Amino acid sequence: SALTANEEARRLVLDSVKNLMIVYIKCSIETCAERDPKGLYAQAKNGEIDTLIGVNSDYLPPDNPALVIDTEVLSPAEAVDAIIRHLHQAG
Image 1 (cartoon, rainbow, N blue to C red):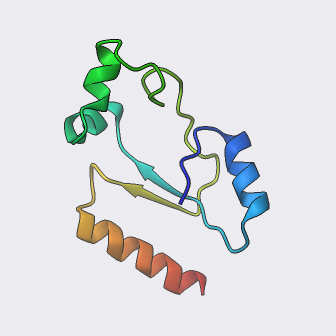
Image 2 (image 1 turned 90 degrees about the horizontal axis):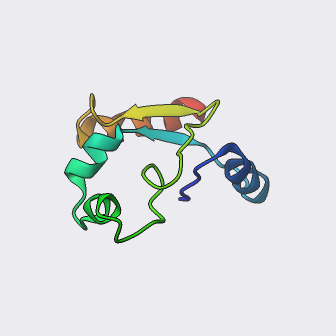
């Protein structure tokens, strides 16, 4: 897996890894902050860290992901099922 905050980074990974599929795990910044077990979003908000993607720098969703998993709509089990179904359909 790789965190890629922009298309340039995604292209680099796509060019480097065979059989790679981009899956966009969609989640609002507010929900990410609510779910944050490490408190990184609170630290970024307080100015304690300045390297949190989505807070201190933009996160640009992928242009053409193979699959979108909306974590605000799907439960974790539903998300896993969607990924498995997609992989089976993709062969």
